[in-house]
Length: 285
Image (tube, rainbow, N blue to C red; front, side, top):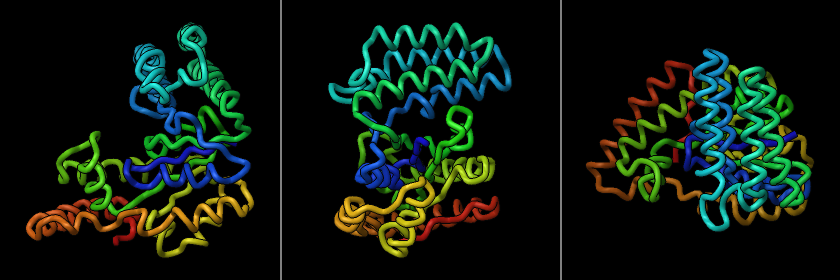
């Protein structure tokens, strides 16, 4: 039973992955975000396209295969699929994937994904694994197409904290209002995924609950959801590292007063739209 953690980006899925990695029965993938499954133009996108239009699906599968062979194969010296498999293996697996995709897109996709993930597991010595690609939460309902027994954890966080965290990075939106809009769009996609996923396969976690408001209960619920009992190792790491201080909540309040007021106004507008659509808004700092 694989575990997929994701969110809006900068919402806490990485800390959840590291936390679960400290359980003796679960191992964080290397790279910790494999990306090729649920990432943009990945295997799930191609499979989704094929369900609507076979020709468009094949075009998307070609793009997914190319990204596996290039962008996701070697992202940095120690980050990428290349740390667990050879170029020749990936080339052969992608070729088989594209040969089989027109006849049976789901079978071809499942075979490709499991070949790659089996190679990663062999390399890191994992029996069960957790991947933290952020898009997992937005496509959690589709992950069951490849892994019917998968468990998907969607980690959500106050959008103002997410936006402030994004603009401090070298990736993603560099304008805080653009980042807020992106958060709203991704929260809506996560909501749709949660409501359409097979029962019992997705769980929503509010980062505020995990680090502040309901720490023990949230951890226990998460472990139960993924079929793990508690352990001394995970409790010790949780107490030391999964804290309010480490989460850096409320950093957006350090901006100038006029900007803070504008952020609050935009955030309130987005939350109103989301609430109208049935989205549960994360707790604020």
